[in-house]
Image (cartoon, rainbow, N blue to C red; front, side, top):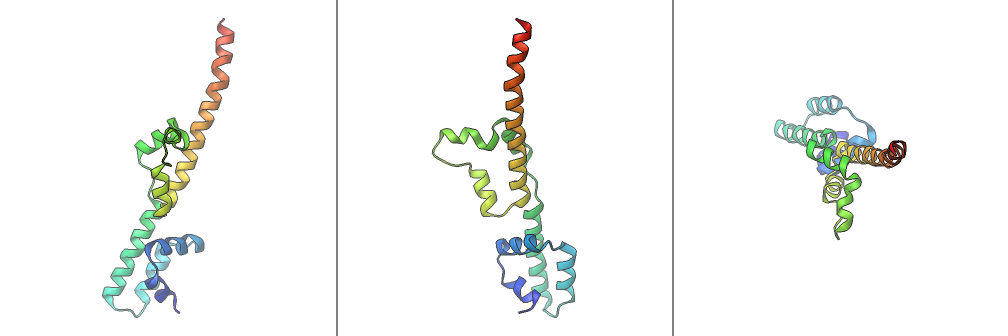
Length: 129
């Protein structure tokens, strides 16, 4: 099965996995598609699918979610309810790769900040009193 025929059969999620596991550049895939012998409508459909896949791979976290995960690392608020963090579940289900990475980065930064504050604040109060 040729490279283009495999790409045509993939769903967007499978396409994202294939692209990320092989570290394909968008231009490389687009050039292969444009040089292929498939009809123009199939080329456009495949290029659109590729564009959607790369958008999901590279889309950053929204500012409100960045702030939320800085102040409530790993969706700490959700631990008091019966549900998991719906955002991270959605990111994983639809393979928003950059959002998943940023979720962990900002949550870890939030945890480190709280840990530092937990150590520094008692020291400052001991110095004051």
